[in-house]
Amino acid sequence: MSRERGKDVAEGGSSENQQQPATPSRYESQKRRDWNTFGQYLKNQRPPVPLSQCNSSHVLEFLRYLDQFGKTKVHLQGCMFYGQPEPPAPCTCPLRQAWGSLDALIGRLRAAYEENGGTPETNPFANASIRVYLREVRDYQAKARGIPHKKKKKQQISEQKE
Image (tube, rainbow, N blue to C red; front, side):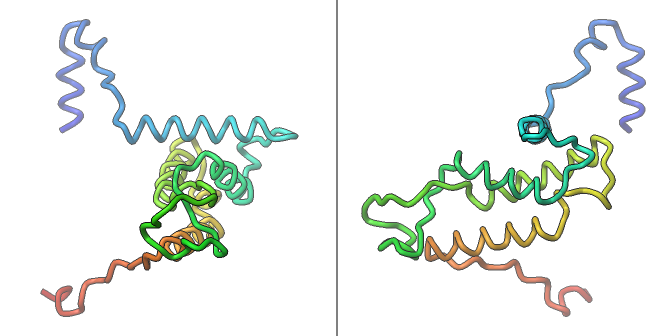
């Protein structure tokens, strides 16, 4: 169907052709912005790291670097509000990147890596160490807020047979 649509547009007037490149979706815009930010991060390293030499340790360093710009209060274990979902007063605990934001970021960067010529086998964003890091962040943040993380349950066997 998209081939036919492309053919219709190609046969249309020149003004239609100029308007054809639609505004990218919010996801695509975020993905491009995240990819550019990561590329800039690698260039700013001393010495600069070429993308071809990037590995999961660079990705982990990038995630830790981003923490300083977070907006989510994550209570430390020594804080009197540790484990309370709605603390009654402010505290000095740091602001961090929320687990969900990091997880979404890694998903976008993982896709962008492959769209920009990387292979799935060498994708540093798909490395097991990244998944372990994200799981640790998720679990710690859930404990700090006193909210257990609930895994999505797989369908029951009887439901799968139907």
